[in-house]
Every structure is written in structure tokens, then in C-alpha cells.
Image: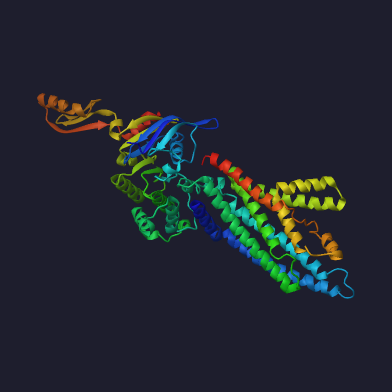
Length: 278
Length: 284
């Protein structure tokens, strides 16, 4: 089965600057994939190459079996750029209608209403973009990216301008998309958000993918904390599998065990470790 | 082709709804009002001198001179509109993040470029022809003078503005919006200056100046189109009237050679190819 997105040995140079230095990445169909990394790590460049906005210097990217940037590939993707703007003179409904025409979507009014409802802008169909807040525009951007029911959605910092309620709406939307089998590549600095919704994450640094896997798999065991009558004891470095043995040992020593907690590093700690504090 | 049509429709809507179009409409109304008043004054003043045997046709000289000035103003207004509608078509829109959501759609970059140009050309040509016809109507009603060729000069002006729109789209691929606007207006000024040099060269019988003007008119054919439009105003003037008309400020009007129109079309196509070449290689 072809991947939703497969990047192999991807390189990109902007003059002397090296944005990508041989990045490899694979996003499976229906997968919610988080892309992490410090500023300048090459995340946005990778997404732009996948969308056909930027040409790679070397390497290749395939989108659902088609070469990235080809018309066939672009028919199957939705994209929201990190820095985007829509014409202020268009209303939300007109903007989606324009993108329906460009995407060849026959969804009509029903699709537009459904998308606006999905992002919590059901009442703003006639509102002009120029009168919308940045958060509303960002949600409209997500609706725009979903026009034509793409099989791969690429979102570059989609929640940067959203308030907590807006973020919650987007989080629920991402889970709904996952339920529908849409693959999502989510490029975000909000680690907690990525940890909450993504099946897998990749951490990029200096144009390469340095860590990759499920958030749980990337976490490093920090120890097992046991609450006994004598107080709380920490068994450093122990993992989940060792917890029963630790408890059994304490009980055999005649201690009473009131609680056990398996400690592991958070995604934030894993991230900081991977990027060396950058 | 449907992609071109969608982009063109979008760009026409954008042109008509942006404030720049409203500003141009207001300026146009002011221009036509002033022009009507000026034409009325000119014909009235010239009428005071008439009497006796007419060596030259005063109405023709007055009408063609003042309408020639109007043609220049219309060309200028059309050029302003063409430049402001297209100066940020590629790089400017990309820098503002307006272009990327469109380019990722299943639409060729060529279609996008052609659609943008076609929309600007349609809006600007329509505007120029409309203002040309209104100015001609005002001249006819106020002074009773009508150009010898009614439609051809307007079409030539519209074509000149389309050439400027094509140059601006080309510039937008390589330059930021501000730099592009400045560059195109400098090119526009250079074209007009070359035309004036040609007139001076003709008057002084200077081959060098005439050669400069000739080369410039091939490199920047909007000037030649404008001059051919001017020539159409008094195409049938003969004798002293023709001589007097050619003494006026726009006396350098040149009739179009047989190659002008084919060259203008080829020029727009070449400019379009250069724009496409750059756009296809541009990272957004």
C-alpha cells in the first residue's frame, strides 16, 4: 500500500543555507502525524516540497503514489500554510466556493456549510475575511484546506493564533478526520497538542529527522514511584515491566504498598533531549 | 482551460472590488469633467479667431490636439490601473501568503499566470475603451469634431495597456511589488521619452535620435501602439491642416507599420513565456 506521504533523502538548499539535509519521512494513510523541531529545522520546507510549492535540490517525495507537486498529487491534498492570507474582500462562503472550483469539488453549498460548521464558523458564512479575527481566519484556513475531501491534509502551525476554545475545536476536528481515514501531517510547536492527538511524531533538527515513533515509544522510562507506609520511594530507571517485581519485593519485605506510579519522560523532555536544548 | 477561466473570474472580481478600482473611477470622473470643461473652453476660444478664408480646419486642429492630450491621459490612467492590478501577481502575493493556497490546488502555474494576465487585460482594455469613447463623445458634443478613425485609436490604446499589463506580470515574477511598480513606471516613462526623442529627431533630421526611437518602439511596443492610435485621429487630414496637426505636441504620431500588430501579439506572448519560465522555477 502506498504511503500518504513518503520523503526519501530529501535535500533543499537556499543559496548557501541548507534547509533539508537528507530527510526521510513516511506518513501512512489515515495516520495523524506530528512534525516537531526548532525554528529552521526544515519542517515548513519539507511540507512545502510535499505541496509542490518548493522544488527539492535532491531526493524525492511521493504523495499517495504520485510525485509531489504533480496535478495528481495536488488533487489529493489539503494545505494550510504557516503564513497565509486570504483576500479580504471575499466572504467565508465565497472563499470556500473559489477553492471548490479550483479543487474541482462538486460538494456545493452543502460541503461549504459542513466545513464552516466543522471549524465553528457556521454563523460566519457571509462575513468578509477582512473583518475576521486572526483566529477566525485560521479556522477558515483549515476549512479551506478541507475543501474537496483531501486524503492527506498538511497543516503548518494551524493553531498558532487560536485561543483555547479554538484549539479544542481543531483538536476535535483532527480526531474526526482520523476517524474518517484522512492522513494528517501536523507541523506544530505545541508539544502537548501533538502528544494528545498524534499517532506518531518525528523530530527534525538541522534538516534531518532525528527521532521518529509513537509518542509513548519515544518516551524514556524515568523510574517507578511507590507509596509505602514508610514514605514514597523512587526506583530510578525502572520501567513499566519492572513495576510488578518491585511491588512484590516490597510486599515480601513486609511493607504495605498504597500506590504505584510508572514515570516516563514527557514528549517535551524527549524533544529537548533530541534537539539538544535548541 | 477551465483553470484559466476560474482564475480570470476571481481576478476580475478582485479588480472590481479593490479600492484601487474605485479610486481610478473617481479620478476618471474628475478627468472627464475637467476634460469636458477644457474642450469647451478650447473650442470657444478658437471660435473667436475664425472668420475670413480658412487655410486650416480649426475644428480639426483643436479637436485632434485636445483629444490627443486626452489619449495620453487615458493611456496613463490605463497604465496606472494595469500596474496596480498586476504588480504583485506572483512575488508580492507569495510574500503576503495569498498565492500559496491557490498554487497547491490542482491548477497549473501557467494557467494561474494566464488567468491573472487575461483578467487584468480585460479590465484595463475595457476601461480604456470606455474612457476613450466617453472622451470622444464629449469632444464631439462640445466641439462638433469626431476623429477620422473612430474605433482604431481606442483599440490601439487598449492594446498598449495590455502590453503594459504583460510587462507588469513579468516583473511580478522577479520583483517585489514596490520594486516592480517603480520598474514598470520607469519603463513606461522610458517608452514615452523614446517617442519624444523620435519626434525631435524627425524635426532635426537626426538619424541617431530616430534610430533610438525606432529601436525603443520595437522593445516597448506600447509607445508605437499609442502613436498609431494618435495617427488614426487625423488619418484623413490633408494639406495645411495635416501640416498644422503635425506641428502640435503630438505631431509625431506614426501610422502603424504592417508588422506592429503581429509584433505586439508576439511580444506579449514572449513576455508571457519569460514570466512562465521564471514562475515555474520559483520557490514559494
